[in-house]
Length: 251
Image 1: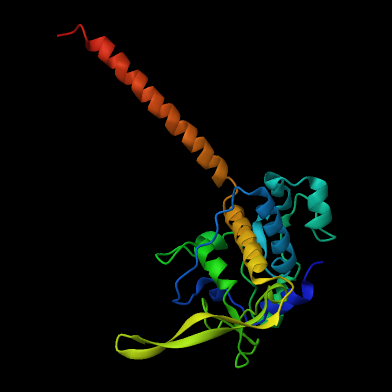
Image 2 (image 1 turned 45 degrees about the vertical axis):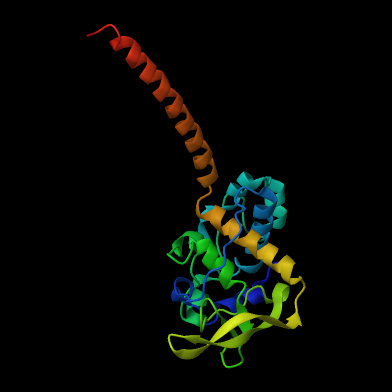
C-alpha cells in the first residue's frame, strides 16, 4: 500500500535545505549491501511505499530495477502506481504545483541523496542511515518530531509506523570545562510494527537502495576495474620480459 497520506505529512515544512543540513553527532556506519539483491529489492519497496509519495527520483526509471533482480511483472505489480509505466521515471505522486502551493516548496529529489552528504564525518549513506534512526518525539515542534542528526528538522519520521516512538536518554558530561548533555541511548515510548533490530535491518536495506540508485553502474564498474587492473598487471610482466629479451644482446 502506498503511503500517500504519510507522504503529504512528510512534505510539511520541508525544504531542500532539510536534506542538506545536519547535526554534529557522530554518524553511524551504514551497512554495505549494494551487492545484496534481496536487500536492494526490500529497499526499493520501502522507498516506493514511504518516500516516493512526496520525493521523486527523477533520474531513475522503473525498468532499471531489472538490475537488482526484478522482472517487469514484479515491478509493475509491486512498485509502480496505477498510472505509471515501466519505462517512466520515478516521480512523486504529489503534484509539484500543489506541493509548492500547500507547503511553499517542492520536496527535494532523492536520486543522489546518498552521494550528496559525503563529508569528513562519513558518507552520505552514513548520514541517511543515522538520520532515519535518530528521530524522537518532541512536542515543542510543529510536526511533533525532532532528530539528533538534523536538529529542528521539518520532516516528521517517515518510518514511524515501523519504528514506533522513542526518546533519547541523556546524561551530563564535561566538555571543554562545561557541563553538556550527551545522548547515551534510547528509551522506547511506543512500539512500532518492527523490533529495533528489524527496523535497523530495514533502514540498512533502504539506504543500500539509495546508494545503488545514486550510481547503478558502480558495482559493474568496480568489477570491470578489477579485471582491467589484473590485465594491466599481467601485461606489465609480459612487457618487462619482452623488453629484457629484446635488449639482452645489445651492448
